[in-house]
Length: 174
Image (cartoon, rainbow, N blue to C red; front, top):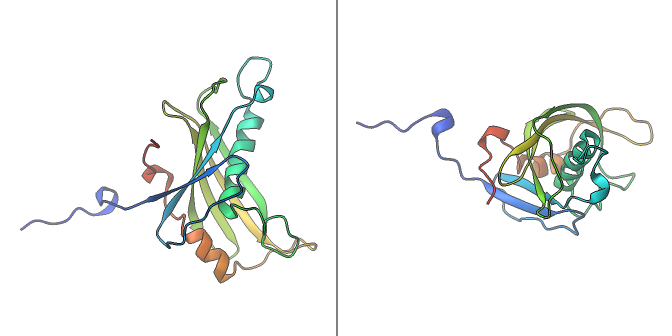
């Protein structure tokens, strides 16, 4: 008698959702779990005096990818009556120096946990050769203009649940 493997060894079907930098946006109609993949071209102006992309710029790349995951067309993110989130915490591990290249870098993003009024988002910045940074971010849903916390609504939960997973389960991009 054979027993199917359990836990991390179980095959899991993941769908990759690709968004290019400064997207007009595309969305997928299927409710399956997806990886949000955001491609970003490096600019010469992103380099610091040492010739590599500084930590602040890397954090900008990670934040842009998270905003694109939340709303690829950015229609609801910047309306004052739409869903609003405050970043409660960023935990960034800078792993390697990123130098200028013609090929874009990619930010892979998944939702680690959806709470009552907060969301844990995990990202990593990589190219085909290496991972340059990992980030764990905590968003808190809030109301404007008061800034008080609020519960996540069903539409937000549904959108975020599409990207649920862990960063270790993300396959290498091709």
